[in-house]
Length: 237
Image 1 (cartoon, rainbow, N blue to C red):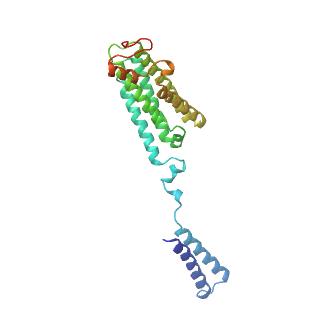
Image 2 (image 1 turned 135 degrees about the vertical axis):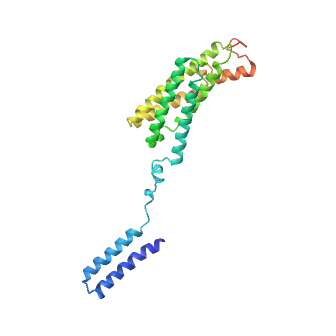
């Protein structure tokens, strides 16, 4: 119904009731005005359009997050959690394999908490990307650990990934507790710290600590079968 009709119809009906009250029924003027006003108000409310905020799709947008963005965030997290669990079964050192399983479990709990409290996603939007980085690191870890004749350089790269995974597990666990406690400031800080940890690894490739990341070692061995170490040209890993 067009806006003009919604405005005209209640007024016309109210005027008709007033006219009938005064002429056909001989009612006092004040009573006719009351009846006419009541009809006008009732029809105006009945014909008024539903407010936009009543639609289900508008609620997440009011939080700054659309349903599609929420669903994509959660789907990406769940996919990475499954990949972490699968990679844990391919890791030979039992202690580190258990640590990766713990990381996957903590990430699953965090994802479930985000599903219950989607507004918190805005405080940690990089979680899916950080989980994907961890999956990529562990895939390289598995590949490098299966290479024959791995030496000190490869061992250092593996230890580096183990340390990163341990720190990431603790960071995700802290984010989960902060989300349960609804500590927005702490959650935001923890998400930023995790992003710095994994982002720094991506930018420096571990060079700041003197150890290459597994992907670099694997690529080098694939390309030439040998890898150079500062001061030792062509040394076998």
